Amino acid sequence: MRLMMFRKYLHIFSFVLFLILLLSQTSCEKFSGDQTTPAYLKIDSIRLTTDYSTQGTAMNAITDGWVYIDGQLIGVFQLPATFPVLQEGNHTFSVLPGIKKDGISSTRVSYPFYNEIQTPKTINLVAGKTLNAGILSTTYSTKTKFIWREDFDDAAITLDSTSASTVRIGQTPDSLTLQGIHSGMVELDTVGATFAAASHTAFAIPSNSGVYLELNFRTNAPMVIGVDLYDAAETFITNAPILTFNNTNNKWKKIYIDLHRSYLLFF
Image (tube, rainbow, N blue to C red):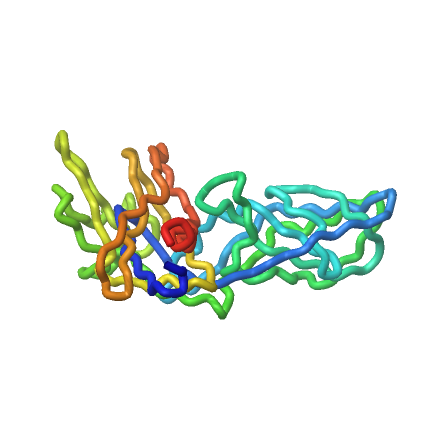
């Protein structure tokens, strides 16, 4: 059947510690110059500012800067970075925050849900000199739709353990909480113990927009996340594992998972 004949639904499954589901899209271009002696730009990092009550934690994994001079892309740079710019004098300057889609180094993209950074809007480039832009800051775009957010602070959470589980989701003590009052916690304290959970709400997957799950996690055991796909009649179609996470060595990590590809892979 054609893709347009289906209405897609998903249930998110496996254990998550802090998550956000988002929608958007973007694009970019290339740039080249003919100056022989470059000026240099230095960017230390890009930080994220959020409204925790509506957008969740400011923890992020912004790894790259997509740098534009006069509206033209001059390159994608892993941060921190010092890089040449074949321009002199006053020019407009902007940066798109970049991430590793699905946590994979070979799939670096500008993240469509973060705002373009335009501070300072104009810079003065001098051949042979380095201009330090320092630490830049971004926020979520106002066009971003937060259709699911779980921080595990409330008594009732939006994940249900499945029949495959032998344990349930608990709440972290203060010493293990990422932010807020609690994070979610699962303890597999016996041989053969298993855990599986799914969102108790189904979400439609749009065919013409990006869909990401942002996940903050800390684990010392393998963990799989994916989707259960249903048709328009809410009949189960298939279970689609997407990523497997391994031991994080007692560190919190952030990942951006492209859920829209489950739509492309299975329809």
